Length: 148
Image (cartoon, rainbow, N blue to C red; front, side):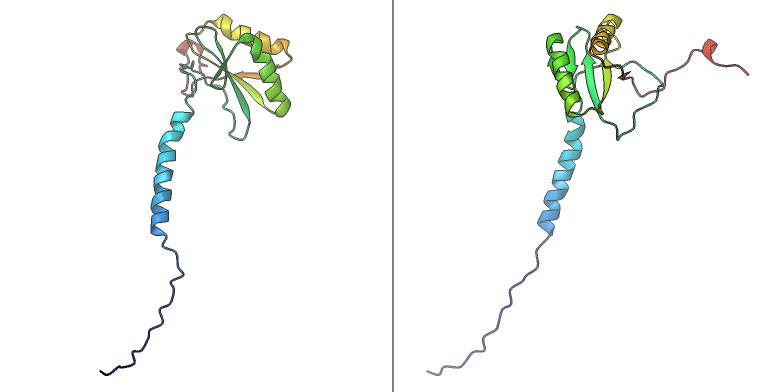
């Protein structure tokens, strides 16, 4: 029986990384986050009134205060009682003194509920408060437009 010497091949280790699975996973995650992110920012269901005021720039920090038809108060999406409202706002403002307050109210909410919230804020010393409106341009009645 004759033994022949076989030539051994040196197998080199591949040191490159296959990126295809990584790209597939990242694309799937991107699609999932793009679909779910708008659902997370819905907050409380409000039908905002229309207005044509200036919009805030994206770099400004805002605290969204809400009041619904029943007169219930919200900080962001969290429901708070009228007794808890000011202490929570004061805690938030102490953390970030530059924050701007915006009141969101359903257009069918009583005017008194919005004024009551504004009065609470004014009594606590917060005078820089804005009102959130729908981004659609409000139609101005013809008799209010300037004639040339």
